[in-house]
Length: 197
Image (cartoon, rainbow, N blue to C red; front, side):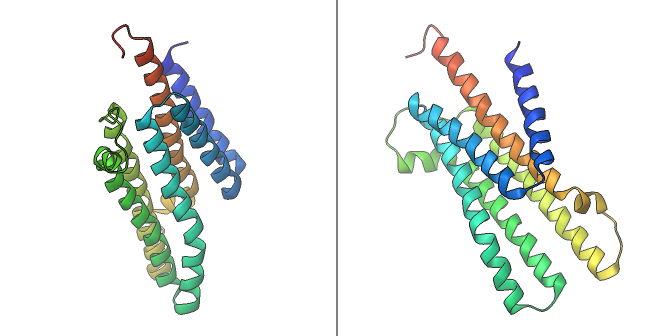
């Protein structure tokens, strides 16, 4: 079976697995476990680029996951408008996606700041990762607009984004995991190359 076929199967299986679980806590655990497996591979094979991309992905996700409930409680205690609470809540998710976008745009520079490894380089995957977070930003923004229009004007203009928001976010998570698995396959091919040092 070709590597591309394996990756497509992995992506489809992971996406449907996330959506079938229908429990954000379990989905988050599975997502972070998948990233951790990639991280372990990176550590075992001293592949610093994979280590850093895995660490950045998991750290951003954990930071958002832990803080968003505190932020939601803060909004509930300080705002009475459902529209404002929802807008700020989803805006928080947008903010994290934008932060992630800039971190991955500058990934090589950040990696070189925190590590002296000579193996740090721009990989083909560094060009893809920011696009995943652009996707997440667009989905969260459309969802926020849909929420706002629906609450203020009771018009379900973008109801697709409201109805399938979780699934669309799971697709972004699936893309992250698939990209990390792609990095592992790419690294294994590099190791097999005759001119690899």
